[in-house]
Image (tube, rainbow, N blue to C red):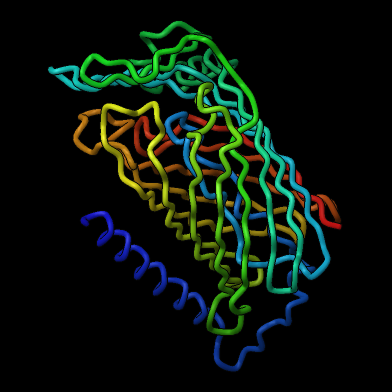
Length: 352
């Protein structure tokens, strides 16, 4: 109940914020027609997900904009993300919960969309996921040493380029594996409806419904083996000629994976995203993006990866080549262990 109240409060504050942005235009100022989108074609929000392995099992809503494709048009967006995770958490002193994860997650995904009508859009996301021993351990340690950053204890204790995935409750292992694996992840099908377009005062609004199909192998921990459902409110606002704002609010219904037989889980995840994209020129932009999600796992485990809500901060740069749009981003976790330590992501978008 506390999390629902807090989520409602955050929604209220963001709604007030979006409305106040509309006031950036004076009453006698003419709002540009829709063709401003062709002058500056936004790349945000960046489609990075929380690829911490414990969240690969569930529907993870891709950050999205409220704009829909014109009727009869397609878009095709291949993306690649690599996320480095190292976790070694134990409930003290009882050792009731043990969570040990040392891996790198590689996500190759292809997002295809079609404009059913000018205000309706269909989409499908096809991911390939690999849990590997990794390639970034040495780079991250050298980076932290160079800038004299504090290295987490789990990273100091672990061997470089190792793989471990263990989740235990009351000395009963639900997951205990040291073998890297990869394969098709859970595909996501979506339908987006744009409820209203942007005007002088109000932002563009859309609703998006998503369904996760159990195409990923639950035995490889690439999916839950269940169907999940999600509903999103998408908000876009052009506050000035060079500044674009994006807001996503998501409610997701999830089912407990069969592997987690020894503890209870919530049946919902709340998540959200806020992004600001600034254009230096009509083609070159930068995006600052903040993403968060609640945890469906037990909140009394005494371990950060299960108890903590995730909060990730992303910085991206994008360039529009006059057709294809390319972006690259880096993401750091704000809350410890509930999301990857660091993620690097790049992608390109095509429209036809």
